[in-house]
Length: 210
Figure (cartoon, rainbow, N blue to C red):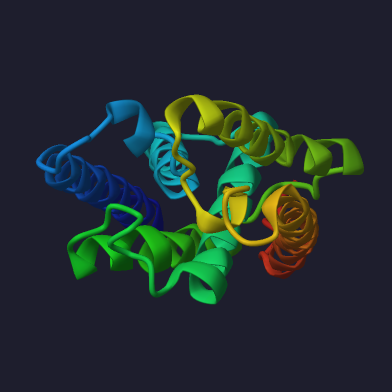
């Protein structure tokens, strides 16, 4: 019964996320100067697409592998940071981020991070990730920052103010923000791993009778 409930909430959360992204895309495409590449250049959208795909994958798998646990940990980390960065830096910039409907903002920045973390605690990984795997979780955010800074001058557009060197402070401010957010990613990745280990330690151990 618990397995069925797990499958259902994973599928529902994933489909709700894809629906929110589809509606957000449709809304954004009606605006002048819309570029599809720009829409998919927001970390929020990319991390939610990744997380929804991960939820669908583990929903249909009867047994989740250790490799899938590593991918789940990455998804939890990305959405936890999305939640924190939005709450601290972007809460008043939803329209500039292309989010025109409050419910979409709720799904992408609040609901999905909570769902991913709850799923991580309810179904913790079999074993904690080692340092190499935790650092692997950080590869995508680093590549994302590099992509945004390289594409920015050519597109004359940056997805977030803290990545825009045209803002006050220039590249020095961008570097400072990037270092700060990298530190947040590292701390969140470490916390995600430790929470998974804690939840795994509380999971009942099945006893095989002789």
